[in-house]
Image (cartoon, rainbow, N blue to C red; front, side, top):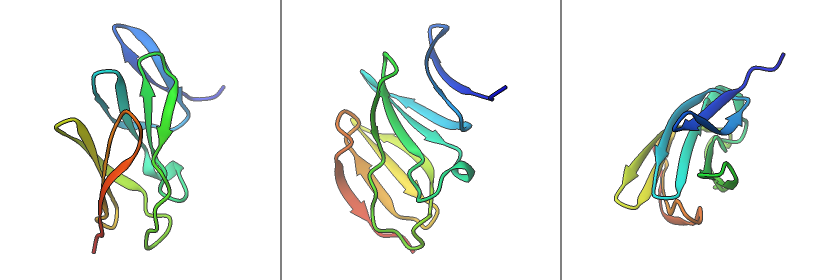
Length: 107
């Protein structure tokens, strides 16, 4: 049996993942999800789904040092989401498109 973790809304399962869900932030029509960092290589442990469960985007690859530095924090900032990785790199992303609006290097 495979263990699954789910995002729900109004008792309806929207999307299931095979990794633990650390945090989910809802926007008007999107949900940005931070998955457990121990399950991802390359630091791409943030997804965005629409309210029907379709994956809209996965955090884009960015040049990180080390390259497998996963994201550890997400937070809502007005209409955008800020992702912070293990090394302190911060991305400001537009939730509707996954476009990186700003990137600040960490340590």
